[in-house]
Image 1 (cartoon, rainbow, N blue to C red):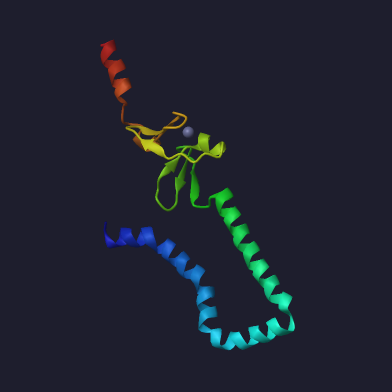
Image 2 (image 1 turned 90 degrees about the horizontal axis):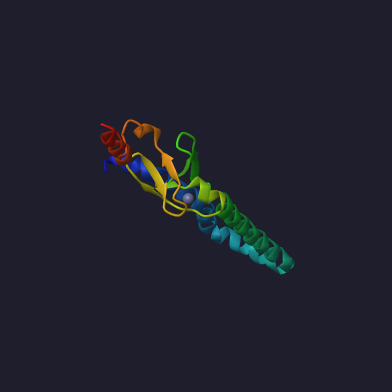
Length: 142
Ligand SMILES: [Zn+2]
């Protein structure tokens, strides 16, 4: 793997991890300044800290629900009719995903096959390649 391919594959996840950890890093950097303010807030309004904690917990659960339901790491590939992972480039069965089952596809000579529902997805980029079945049918005719 060349350096450019490595950067293409990992720059987005690395940037997302840095972006996600930035708020926590800022809080940790400013903890000396924030601790007295938080202590006085907790003394004057004890329920406020609990409300903030409940809001953060709710945000985490909403984010988890969004990720598990929407799966934003999958992208629809129009020409092949399959779902493609943005992270690993693996393809997934559209028929199975409609029934909430995520099944990776097996790579075959002219396309991909789902090993769960046995549906076949043709690859337009490999349309020039004849499958072994078609070759056998042609040779029988001659
Ligand atoms: Zn399937």
